[in-house]
Length: 136
Image (cartoon, rainbow, N blue to C red):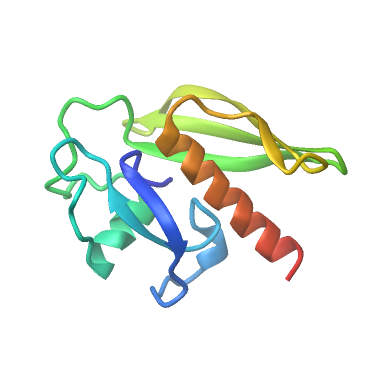
């Protein structure tokens, strides 16, 4: 469950996690913070661990008033035409929003993206990690 304010930008295979494929975005990522007032923050490796794992309640940047605490993804279907990702936004470990995002394999584009650019970017990273594991 990645932090909802995390904006991943590039894979970070040098950040040591015991089981990187089990991470919420399918691998570890570098990126930035989109929490209000902290968009220019440079994140340390320790902070990136919390960003990649979500529920970073010890993070000083995490706003008190927020729509959710974490974002989770899984592959719902994988066919030759469409990959469907299920997403869940959680608050206090309970789902607050859920749905499906669709990626067209033939068109190489999202046919049903998420309206929040942060969640959409995380979905793109999750899908990239999925492809990397599927077709090494």
